[in-house]
Every structure is written in C-alpha cells, then in structure tokens.
Length: 130
Image (cartoon, rainbow, N blue to C red):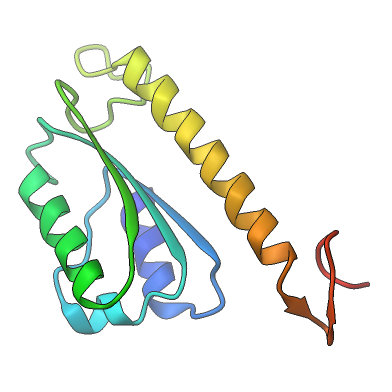
C-alpha cells in the first residue's frame, strides 16, 4: 500500500519534490498525472499480477503525454513484494538490492537539486534557510 499512498500524495501535494513507488498502483487518469509535480521513481516486478507491467507502461505513457518523466524499472522474474525478505517465495535479493540503490541515488539527486532552488529568497546549497 505504501507505493500507492506515495503516488497519491504526489498527486495531491504540489510541494512534494520526490516520490518512490515500489510495486504500487499507479494512476491511469491523465488529469491525475498532470497534477504530479514531484520527480517519480518506480520499481516493479514483471510478474506482478496486481500491478502488471502493462499498467506501468501505461503510466509511463501518461507521464510523457503530461510532459513529465518517470524513472521506471521493471525487474524480470520479480513479482509483487520482491523487496520483502519475509516474502519467502517472491523475495528477489538482487532485484531488492538494485531497487534500494536506485531509491537512495534518486533521493540523493533530488534532494541535491532541491537544495539549489531558491528558498526563502536566496539560493542555498545547504538546504532550507534557518
């Protein structure tokens, strides 16, 4: 549910800078997609029956139609909850490690970019002004 909640927050909170969706339901409505201001990263499994790759690609297409982009990776052989080690039959350690590295890198890049934006009337490299 976390991935689904994350993208819903991106739709409804225009100040959100970054959103990561790990095998969460993605919007299928262009109106919703156009409301997303955040950078979006999506990690999902090719064998996920609840969130099939076709829906992920449809979301990607909507993002392009809206003039936005999303960094999307579909992991071959992975299904839903492939990052969860408690998921005995579906856990994919290599895919999980890669998705985690992608997430950390994505947040690092997004936070760095956001810290360079004008905040409180001045450009700050070190984050929000006090």
